[in-house]
Image (cartoon, rainbow, N blue to C red; front, side):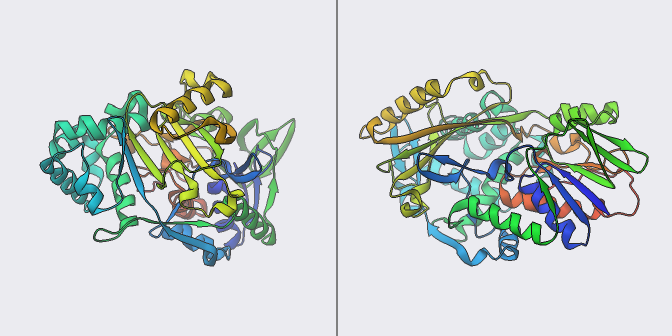
Length: 442
């Protein structure tokens, strides 16, 4: 069977990998100059590294299995990292039991209730009841109003902006479950991993492995229309039509709907009804590190970014020519006016905030500053979200869709993306097409 995969991010590449292993003819159609999507690398100053920050956890079994198939898992570097917390205008270590016990913003009772809540969430297996209550309501019930107002709500607003109070408790459960798995049992510190040379190397190896399986990769290919045809599914680009037996569109749900005129009104409404968060992510290359922490969580509404990700606290600085690579992500709605800000405006705002957070920081230490903007990253996990999923198997014979909207109540990361690809395989390979319930990763 001949498959077309529209979108060459890690989801599309993993689908192509799985299909090729099953003996099918696969072509990836990618609009960018190279594959990778959100994991693609770019150049910051003299350094080539990931455009957005990524980390591998020891519990990321699907990703680690894929890296093993790419002969890259032996090259995973595992590092114990630290965590910081910026609240009330001050930086606090937050890396272990001792730091937690000394954490000034919360009283002993509040700390006990917070720890009990995290432990409770980590033990929940069925997330469905959590979709019926907001995260703020659930956290207030278990942690208390003060802890929610001082800690949780600022973190939710940093991640979800004006939609923070609309997110279901399943969203918090997913975050806690993944990070708790990183710690393991007891007061252990997180151990995170990365492949040497980042996703630049991983993606190049992936492309080589796909080519060895005769997967065709067409980059700089802009699909204009995807529709049913008498003998399959037609993908149209620049006046040229390519016919496939089956096509999987991996673009964000609203973008996929625009390309597929044959969808029913209901399918189109479900796709267009997914509310996405976007990201504005600055990459800085500096002479000196800001902190010893891989991640600094920020519970301060005056700071214009979500967190400070210090990659050089995880990755050996030799990978960055002896410099420090720092990410400053800002999560916003897909239509937020911040997408219209210039790079200079973002640089001024972000660096001013760093100066307030870190009095020792000097702009003269910044060797490069670059901004990434992506309007469609992950959906806002509102109440009952799993009941409104766009279909993966559409009413157009041979046409499928899969994207981050189908990662239900999980955090968007490479491991969940790989799992989504694996879970889609049975419906892709079914001998006849009949729309079923949407595939979801939970």
